[in-house]
Image (cartoon, rainbow, N blue to C red; front, top):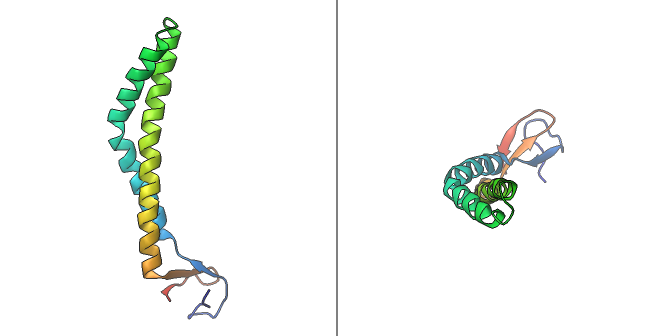
Length: 105
């Protein structure tokens, strides 16, 4: 790990700003894109849960919808974070915890 060129501190770590932005954006896009998956999951869950009248249909539909939405959100978050990590690595950006300076190595 390089020392800070501004203050000389060794309290430096990789700046993961783009990883965090990618994960957040990917998660939001994955959630938005998974609405169809949530609807399909709710329908499938309701059909499976219909073996137990009323409660089975409600619970099965809710669980199926949540799993459909969660799948898209998790996939989007992982993909966005991976893309952001690649960008962070390519930029070689670091941040000093002593003075707050951000620099390229």
